[in-house]
Length: 517
Ligand code: NOJ
Image (cartoon, rainbow, N blue to C red; front, side, top):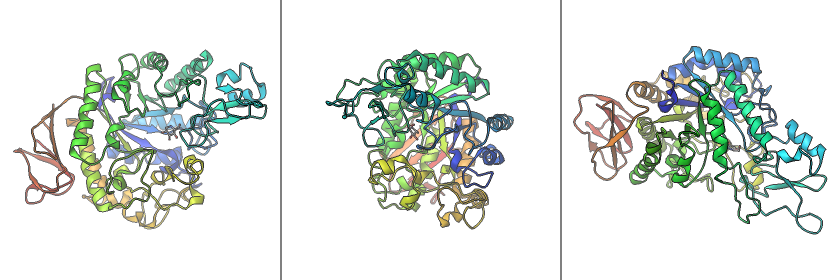
């Protein structure tokens, strides 16, 4: 593969805690992942992105990092991580890790030191500490709200307040402090030296804050670009490595600034997954994405799900098929048969588009969102911080079903940290392996074709009636998605490569994608 292998790669997201448990404690780990590497090789992915694997009190599923240079004991050891990277490489699978620059954990040495050192100290200067307002400093420095609900400031014993855009256990770093800049350069080198092939940058747009602003003012300040220019220089000093940024930003022109040739190589495209199942909407998203990426030479990415959003099978079965963090539509009725049908069609559509692809674990099994987890088991800080108004993201993080008829479905020997629905016996990897019509079979077949005919490059739209998306790729593969309620004729072709659902009298049924040549 070329140095720019990432331009068209299919990348599989492993949420380690829920992937496979090797030691029987109910929590997925590196030992479990290592035993399942052949499954991922057979699925046909080019790389694995792992959510944070560092020591963490897990106030936010590991996005509260206590030590950026080690592995959480629940997941394994640094030696095991190195062994995993090597074993994956031997199977042709690269590794992308998650770096969290906006905030650390309140248990991290730097923060513990900052608390002890007191107001005005250099140790506090690494974070965003401020005196409070009001006669006795009893009010927070401003009225900003945290992204996870509730105030964005917490007061410490000596009266000062610190900023946390997320949970109180996740204090924000001060990116105007050169020590912070240097520290993250060293962390990047630490992992690049250990052979990781890519870096996913968490909450990449929010590092700089304008605290004097009444409105929350932290997204997309111009200063942030200099940070990623520094990261790019480091990443490019190693061969074949790349950056992928996580930015939720409505303005695609501003989004594209992060992908200039001296900044990030790629970024997650969330516009596509937020759109409803509607041909005009999806076409608009594809055109917008291409229009902002192509001129700067950055490959787009296509994402249908991740550990923060509603599972596609559930989302696409609802009367409202859009996604938004503001309202996750938890409990809105869903038709899972319809949802699965559309999720299959969406998968082939996304896989046919030019650029990179992300597949979140369980997406290839067609897992639905689990919406009936008992309150007392929910772990997402969004649930408690919203006083239950938002049930959070645990429903897409339930441990995978691998095999067998009963829970824990081969996940491991122990009781999984979140319970799996008993009807997942029909969704195990094992049962789907044996079924040529399963979601797993579709993903395998599609990824195989994608490897030779799709990925990086460009597309040409072909004329088609309203409600139908038809385009051709450089390889000659044509993808057609029918979002109308009625079957349609396929254009003339010499070969039918794959369909997301069986044809109906040689016609392409509603909510179906076909790949033809
Ligand atoms: C984005 C991550 O994907 C999400 O899971 C996390 O809660 C926030 N960033 C904060 O780190």
